[in-house]
Length: 328
Image (cartoon, rainbow, N blue to C red; front, side):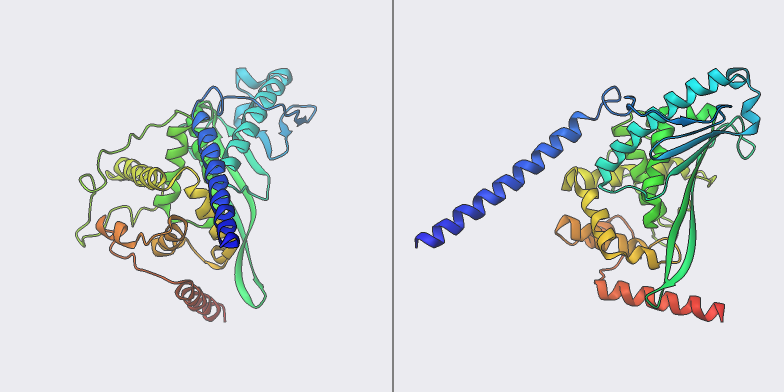
């Protein structure tokens, strides 16, 4: 009887310690939902800067001025550019550490940031691009990250919410997640932590859903923030509302668990394109400890179905076989 009681006490103490550790982490994350204490705080980084101050480098970033920006009055002298690089890289290193804490992982490659006066014919767009290389490893097709590039017109870079949004993409793009989740989690971090959100949440996921003529949630066919559609603003808001709801239900470390599970399996590296929402919901369910397929089906994600890891592996193998046939 005594050994049984001892095991029970140890188990209870272990569970209590785990719960307390999780509560401390959640408290710490909640306390950091303040722009002055997190997203606007500069780190102590001392970047390396070239003599002409057109290029700077820190632990996790490089920063350079595009040619069209170098002649602008605010950046046409070396000391002006040098001062800006010191401030910018310090700020972004602070963001980097915040993102690493929220997601539990970080990119292996340095993030290359280029500042422009005009980019792609506009001063109103910021873009994060992930470069890939492809190969065969252990007899299977895999994608590997070869670089991450962020391009900002200066007008957009000066908006701290935009910086946070794009940096979130730099962190999460390596997992080839669906567009709606990529944009939703970027808006969540931008809004809840950087306090720079432009897309307020909806009151109700069910009441504010929009479905197409096939009865499918309009998030499912979202191609990203380069899209120009009357639905674009709704998609940002609804994706944010959905991502925030799951976060609220399952805790501040929910998405850390999701990305840890993805990383452990490494299946995303074998995908040729973005993962279907069904695969993402598989990892959501694993992290939540309950089946979330009914939740998504109620929101008219009609393509979502219940998967096992075996189903996912078979899907990827079939996809890889198609790739090989196309290349033969």
